[in-house]
Image (cartoon, rainbow, N blue to C red; front, side):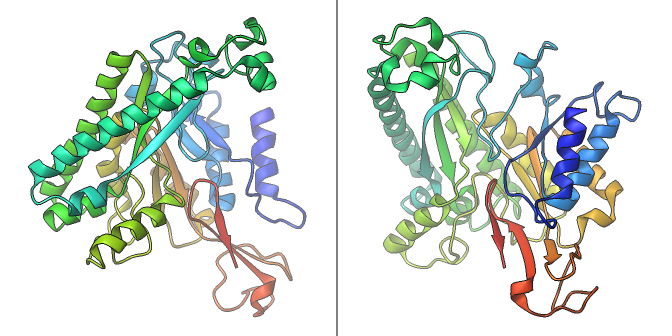
Length: 381
């Protein structure tokens, strides 16, 4: 009942039907619970798809993805969860492997295209990448030690009210170092696509050779994170960074050093994490298929977006097929982006080009156009 009415409230929108930007709703998909037509909550799965077709949310997390299912024992604590943008906290070498009562302590992201342009060969790229990751690992360790010297009294709500598991058992003057071992330290990255162009001349949507190298790069980064976890006995992990401002900042820093290079620095941003560039023409199925293997490698968080250019609410079966393709391909967390327009004058909802098809309104200030450009933010006009 709660899930149903939360989805219906999201569909209804705010006030006169305005699309709500928060909360970010994430719908968990699970075979035997809501995925098959014979499952007891399939109606909620269908309602979630209908809701996202009208309001952009919910996103979908897939409990049955092998790297999520490995933790699942049928209890709520064992169900993987994620922040709206993508951050995932699950594995834990110091206690119960769960999301509840834990969090990500810090993450630092690597500018892959910059390393690519600084390298003359693929071998020299991996040498630079290895050095950079080692520096990030040391930095994250230093930040952990800084955080660990703080006391419960510095964060009375977080560590004194049971928000962080075990915190309520500590005295106010206790240091946080042992407690914070439950958290994660994440190595992130941006611009795999542009990095591949700098090294090979093609990104991983265009070339099998580039795709294989892209996987090799991310596998190497995950291996380094796992090695750091063993060495320092802390929860190091690899993050497909939600590079909101950093996608532009990293580009500007790289362009300042190397100028404008076609396919690498000729746009205003670097492509997010391991994503195939949004401007590259590729089928929905192929994009999902190509990005799925990166999800199993990025254990600190990931997402795959698909972009639609029409009114998604007109074809529920097609929307469900997209979500099912994500699940069956091994996607851990996925979302569907599409235009959401509303005429403020008459309340019409649907694609609005130059004028409202219902009342003929042409004044731009009376037409609301919403486009999601990150996990949280949308653009309005």
